[in-house]
Amino acid sequence: MWRVIGGLAASFCLPGAISAAGHVFPASSSPRRRSIAFAAMGGGQAVGFGLGLVLGDGVLKKELFSRVVHEIDWVGALLISACLALLSYELAVATGSNANQSMREPMNITLLCVAVALLPEFALWMRRQSRLSRPTLVPNTLWANLPFTSMCITVFLVWGTLNASEQLASLYFEDVLGKSTLTASLYFLPAPICGLLMNISTGAFLPHLRPSIVVPAACLVSGIGPLLLATLCRLDGPDYWQGPFPAMALNPLGADLMYTIAILVMTAAFPARTQALAGGVFNMLSQIGKSVGIATSALIARQVTAQTGDSDAMESLLAGYKAGWWYNCALGLISVLVSFWGLRSVQKVEVKRE
Image 1 (cartoon, one colour):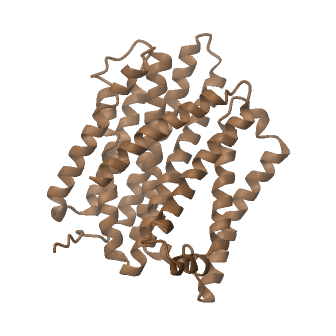
Image 2 (image 1 turned 120 degrees about the horizontal axis):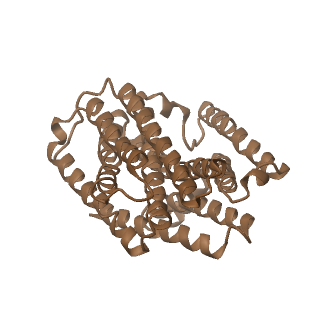
Image 3 (image 1 turned 30 degrees about the horizontal axis):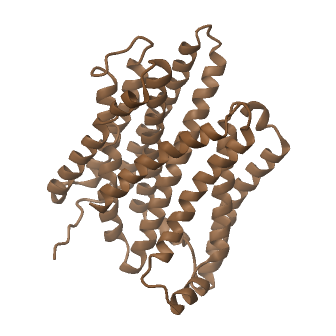
């Protein structure tokens, strides 16, 4: 029930926050401040998640503050936080209205290079901390577990596909079809309903499910959602029940099933002292996947729209949205291959009962 409430809260907050930031910082008059706002929004998710884990650890006592100072890898946290913040900023710049000019500016090129360079630097720092038996934020040995690594890659791809497809669908409903905001929001109702049914079914049949088959199948079903949107959506339709409805219903299935399976795979793959860390990394990658998926899909859609050069503005917009959906479909198919390869040795998940 708490997961349901948390999911509803995130669903209400994120679209509204994006809309508010876009309204306060228009792309025409404040492109740089708009990019900074979106970057801060993406970084705030990661910071809030980390602070929640630390500050939610029981009653605030002196011993807790001592642990926060001495038992946390602050250098590693600084490296990865700076990397994610810079990448979020560069993705926001790359999807801006004047991206072709902005991305050629020396400052943005430098920041992008620094962000990319921080990734191997973070891995080297993790290796050093482990070798010296010091606190390590994310030990490199965590990635040696193949099922866990494949699930992390899969959730990164699936969460990006899910959110980007829905973002483009919302733009299609409002900008191309001319639907009101209320009508467009009602079009998304099949997603939470089907997600709830998926979670109920997963709980009922979980002891009989094989992750090596079920997770790739769910990812394939989710990849069909953007495929339907890319092939069926036109300026004059189709009817909601023929195209958008099945796409909205299929879109969340892979993501909802994956969370339950991933939690059980992680508890079986790691000892108790490592399970919280593995879960934190898994959740972090799902959040990053959302930001990267939306940003890259928006970038592709914008570039295709700009290159179409069609006299009909709506036709150009639709061409860009379709390119984004084809990209999301490709990510969904990649997640099928990754999950099948990584989970091939996992037969059935254990369901422990008290």
